[in-house]
Image (cartoon, rainbow, N blue to C red; front, top):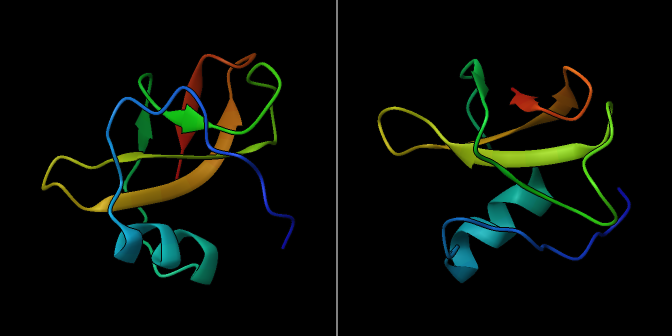
Length: 71
């Protein structure tokens, strides 16, 4: 898995959560328009992450022309 620098992260992630992102231990939980992503600008198909409704960490891919993250 390619490592990417996390920028534009609306929530600060703990070390454990960052490890979970890299390890892929994440829930599948729909789409969000507020998400963190790697450089440069959001591009469809790029990895991204966001918080689910229950506070769980969701790792997905960018879609909708860079407008949302779907996990």
